[in-house]
Image (cartoon, rainbow, N blue to C red):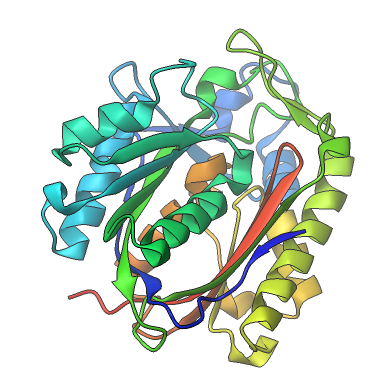
Length: 327
C-alpha cells in the first residue's frame, strides 16, 4: 500500500474552488431498454440509476473539462494565469499524445503550466489530488487544477445487459493552493494503492473496445478496497467515524455506496450520492458529486469529508479533507 501522509513542517494543500459539468442530453432508463432485455425496475434495484447524461459530438473531453474548470477557477476567485499545474484524470481521451491537459490549459488561459494526464480508472481523481498535493507542498506550483473527466458513452456496449445502464459522461474540477492545516479546505491526508493481479476485473483494450467487467468480483473488491482505504485515511489523521461529517464515494452504483458506508460505519444521512441521475462517470464522479453537494449547500466550511474510490487496475484511493470556505 502506497501512502502519502500529512505534511510535517510544510504548508498543506487546500481546495479553494470546485466546479462540474454535465452534458445537456439526459438519458433515462427507457432509452437503455431499447437495446437490452431488462426493465426500469431491475436497473434501479440493481444500481440505483434512473438517468445519466451522454455527451454530444461537441461536448468533448476537452470542452467538458474547460466548462468545469472555469467554474472551479471562478469559485476560487483567481485568474487562470495563476495556475501552475493542470492534472487531468481520464480513461476516455484516446490520443496517446499530446495529453488533453495541455489543450485544456491553453483553452482556459492558464499560460504555460505543467500539464499532464493520468490514468487510474475510477480512482483517478484521488490520484490527481495526491499529485497536486505533492506539487504544492514541494513548492513547484502555488495553484493546481485537478480535473476528472469522462465520455464513457463512447466505451459503453449498449447490447451488454450487465453494463449498458451504468455509465454516463461529465467533468468535475477543483483548484488547490498552498495553505495551512487549520484552514478550511486542507487536504490532510491521502492513501492510494493498486493490485495488478486484478487487472482483468475492469478492462478496455483500445478505443474500438467496450468496457468488460466481472460484476460480482468488482462489487466485492470495490466494497473492501474503498472501505479499507477510507478507514486507513481516517486513521492517518486521527479521525474516528464520529468525526466525519460526509463520506463521498466513487459513484459506481448505489449498492456499492451503501455497502461501503455500512462497512466504514457511516450512516446514509452522512453519505453523499448523485448516482441516481448521473450514473457512473468514473474519474469525474467524486468531483461532480462534490460540486453538486456544494451547490446545494450541503457542504459547509470546515466540514470533515472522506473521499474513497476503486477502479480498474485494480486501483484505489482515499483522502481526508476539510471543506473550504467559498464566498
